Image (cartoon, rainbow, N blue to C red; front, side, top):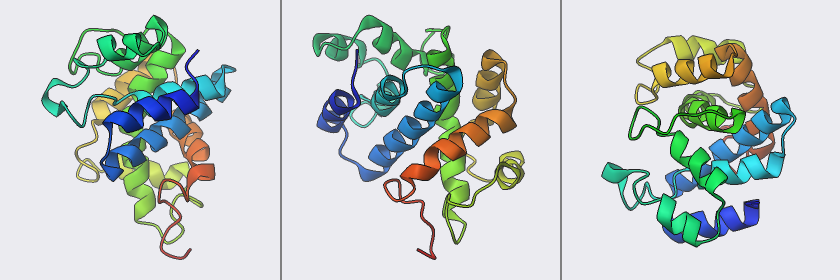
Length: 188
């Protein structure tokens, strides 16, 4: 099973840009929270979340086309590689998310971008962010416009969950990592 330590080792061998490493940490934290929600292995889901954009920096136009072979060769299980590939469903591939891990990754990849943008605007960052404030920003299509809300809502539907519920789980899951992901706010 993929460990967080191994995921960081693999990801950090390919990803050098700080903003992409921060994104990996955001998704890692959100995936840990989703794992807890579903009663699954938190570290395992965090590891998959951390590694999800393995090839993005080097191949942004061919995202996820340079993931499967190298990760399998590095000893990552087929199940974990499939989960990673599934976050590109209907965007860059046709690997449909089936498991709760896959559906969660598909959903939180974009969702964490809006949470991060929302938290960056607050004096206390994510530390006091509530889902009500997040939802106001989520409904404003001009805010964090590059984050695909349709993908997020499609993922929530796959999970059989409401956007508010998923957002709250992710926000709470990201709060303990506020310092690490640069979301402590301007007051800290």
